[in-house]
Length: 330
Image (tube, rainbow, N blue to C red; front, top):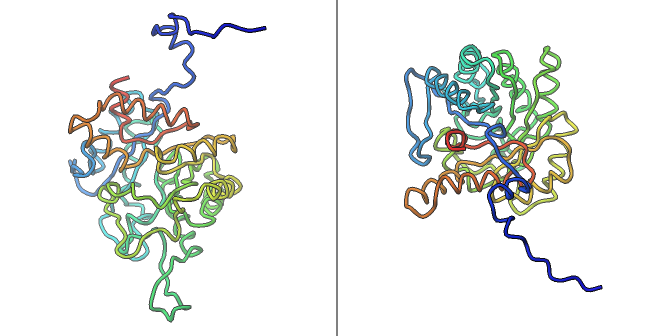
């Protein structure tokens, strides 16, 4: 039996019908808003490569967090810029650190807002790398390597200091092997079994991080991070890394960057039942902003479309500097 060619009815073009059959939606409930916290008072320092994003002192960050909450955003993600840097990044875990102060102040001012903290050392080390450095004995000590296992102990200290300050979730971004298991062990042994871990499980050695390194003042002083971040050419490695983090106790698996890696988000969504997060990173933000400022793109429409694409690919959570803009517009 031959069927006539199917032709969509005119009704499908109406807004009401399109809304009913839409497969994917995005709302502010899916978004996390990043905040950069720095020393000082009443600080709101613009970041040249990220228009509309600022380095903020604790008091200013509290106001920003309150505004995010009042806009209906469920969570913020804190990054810290310390007063001092050293080879170990010791200001990452001190009680008087900027992130620790910000967590306590935000939770006091806006108790229902979820406060997530980035757990890494790159912002705090004088060399800008995410771990402890040791001399490469195989090459006669003329070069240095990341000491993975020594770094794990420091990351445990950082995560614990954030939990003690009142963080609702920790997010290790360093990409050291075994760090999720080490942090989970440290949290559990100290009575923080309820603190979840959102792991930067699939973090590529990407060129899209440039503006973030301006914002967090954490560019490596030599070399790069390709020895511990993922090769941008690899996808099967993403499954291996995510599987290891899941087995070590991660509660959420993150893919970073976002838009160039929608295939990886989709790959993880098919493989895992854990929530999947995507980070719309600084370079993605800066490109959209620059194009919009030049009149080449409709910023509002592109923001919505890009976030919708993350959701369509399988992301449950999106970390984006556009979170406030989206919440104000949609």
